[in-house]
Amino acid sequence: MKIKFGTDGWRAIIAKDYTEENLRRVAEGTAQYMKDQGLTKAVIGYDCRFGGERFTNITAGVLGAYGIHVILSSQGFSSTPMVSLAVKEFALDLGIVITASHNPPSYNGYKLKSSYGGPSIPSEIEAVENRIPDKAGIEVLSLEEMESKGLLEYRSLEDLYLEKIKNSFDLDLIRNSGLKIAYDAMYGAGQNIIRKLFPKAELLHCEFNPSFLGQAPEPIDRNLGELSSLITSNPGKFDVGLANDGDADRIGMYDEKGKFVDSHHLLLLLLQYMVEYKNVKDRVIITFSVTDKMKKLAESYGLEVEITKIGFKYIAQRMQEVEIVVAGEESGGIAISGHIPERDGIWIGLVIFEFMAKSGQSLTQLVDNLYKKVGAFTCDRDDLHISESQKTNILNHLKDNTPEKFGEYSVEKVETLDGYKFTFDNGDWTMIRPSGTEPVLRVYAQSESPEKVRKVLDAVHKTLNAL
Image (spheres, rainbow, N blue to C red):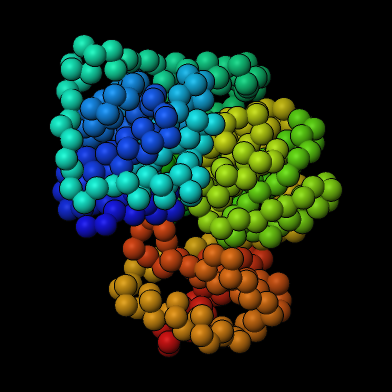
């Protein structure tokens, strides 16, 4: 079986393709890559998924067998941003995170982080893939053997991360503002950080439960009904709701009315805050599926906007070459100036908290003010769980026979940077692309209101079903 990394690492179903044998193969490919590049030090972390600690120990044992020095967390599970920060702050060569991020609980995965503290770039990932053997061969060292050889040490990734936060945010301002926070960890690795930063926050799903109660830990509106209900059923009790995915690198938020504030709106708010309050005026980088309102706001500030393929690794690669104000994806992965080149759902939540505290405005007011600058809009996404043959048929048809209309919507412009993006003559748009992390076809849309977005999505579905 050939093992390939997707948009964000290798992911597979536990006990099907995600086996100890295949994990050892991937770890051997990683270790061989490190040896070939003269890299000698790595940190390995894991989130709250099933088998995380065992899979981490196996990975460490493979690297140890190659003579690579490994750092493990002294406090159990870690978020992906904690591992990325540790790579940079401890001056290491590589980071590995055992996580499947937002995928369903039946999955686990394997992410790579480079020395700068962000996702390894595509060429580095390809180099690792090319070294993955067909069969695991090297004997795995035990942690005791590694310690006796001086190849293993334990350090607190959580304390490192908390100290970085304390040095970067006005936590006293946030706490003294009276901000009332509801937080949903989705049983993920962010649970301890929010508990320690904001002891008065209302916590949901902040226990260790690798089953996630059967819910994929992706912080999107349809997965966060309990958090939304908590806010809407207690008027005036909460000012903001924050949610993170399984490894806490993605974000979802709710305003004080229990309305979901998606990544498109968060990116706009972050851009406004960084320019108007922090006076940061560098480049804006967004992936292909992010709202075009980002370009409108950035241009009003005289800032350049760059659009990449979908996958934070493309953003991280550009962040090694240019300074940014903010960068991010539609799917909840956002980075910001002053932090590592990594998605960080907790960090981004703290920036929004600080914006609210400094401005004295609610999240609803901040979004309403944004609409005065760029116009009201709604974005949404449907995930179509269809067969591989259906997916291939649709993509081939779009490639060979570009639709001129989707229902009543006439196509004015077609873009193919990553998937197929169709802009209509009324300014609305839809985008169709296969997921790089799950067996689904994603259909995105933007219009003026939720009702109009639903109308666009339904028209697209009808057209696709007829192919």
